Amino acid sequence: MALGNQYITPMTITIDPGLYRGCPRLDEDKGQNANSNHGSCCKLNATNWLSDIPHAITESDLVEVRFKNTRKGYYRNVNALNLKAGEMVAVEASPGHDIGMVSLTGPLTINQMVKNGISYKDTEFRKIYRKTKQTDIDKWKEAIDLEQRTMIRSRQIAMDLNLNMKIGDVEYQGDKTKAIFYYIADERVDFRELIKFLADEFRIRVEMRQIGARQEAGRIGGIGSCGRELCCSTFVSNFVSVTTTVARQQELSLNPQKLAGQCGKLKCCLNYEVEVYLDARREFPSPDIVLETEEGKAYHQKTDIFKRVMWYSFDSNHATNLMSVPVERVKDIIQLNKRGQVVERLLLKEMEEVAPIGYMNAVGQESLTRFDDKKKKKRDNQHWSHRKGRRKPTK
Image 1 (cartoon, rainbow, N blue to C red):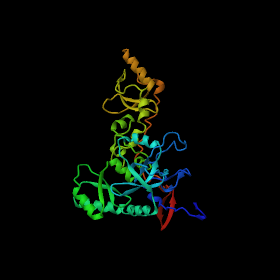
Image 2: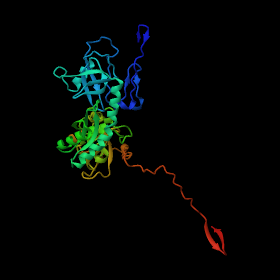
Image 3: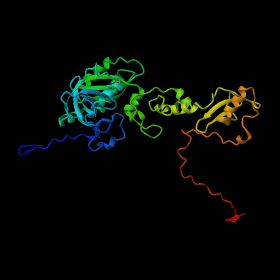
Image 4: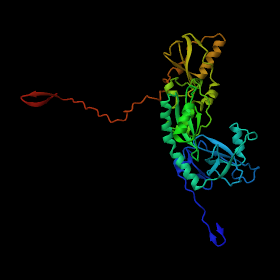
């Protein structure tokens, strides 16, 4: 910046990439993530699809700011700062100030608030003080360094007080005057005594915030049974209830060990494809209908939606001697039974050559040593006999 004949170099602020609190910083000028180490986590990103449309609609002074993991807040830009997504700002807190990252600006912020059930007309929003200075970042970094040690120590204190709760995460405020303790508990917990111990131990204001098992897994993260990062720690922000009915509709085995995720609840991914299964099932007849044949009554046991076959057996209590019947054949038999006709056979002669059930248990079916090099012993076709102290081969 030129001032008369002097040139002043703008102050550069250095931020550790690990301080972006679980999500990458979006560099809009370059169109890429400045923090490539955490590029896989983008659950808090919000796409501003009006950013390249100048003066499209009236601008809003509300700004969306994100903090550690899943916490977001909405603030007013009272000082008319030129803010962009990915910039660090100091915002009003109670008490003191907090440090967060701008995730969305402009008129789309109001749409985001409506989506989250926040009334922008009746809510009193806090202010954005300024863009962060180097001193703010240094103090914020010191606060972040205390979080892990504080969480371990707080767990010990809760254990000494015999409280039936688990502290899963700690989030310090940017000025180190306050900390949020996220905990999970099955029953109501009286943690008034715990707050006193924590306040005396760490010399901070304490806020206790209860979360569920799914939220805890989303904050901690991990690898799922599919080999990918947990959905709740990457892109899922709103949890939808999952029931065993969803598993039944997809013909999945009702085994809790296979259907449960790392949080101990049913996997969120069970909801991903259930609509496709329900749509495909509309062309299938009801499995409650019993087929009348001269061979006996055929009872439904299983449906293969992809191959469009339904498996029947003549034993209503046990799934023995299963026979796969195409859906079209099942419909024909039902129509004939409605007319009072009993078909001769469940399957026509050209349908008898049917492959066995085409599904396998994908969990635990393979041995961990299946790729080991097992040396096979060569069969020795020669028999040896000892004669006069010498070995002599005999046929």
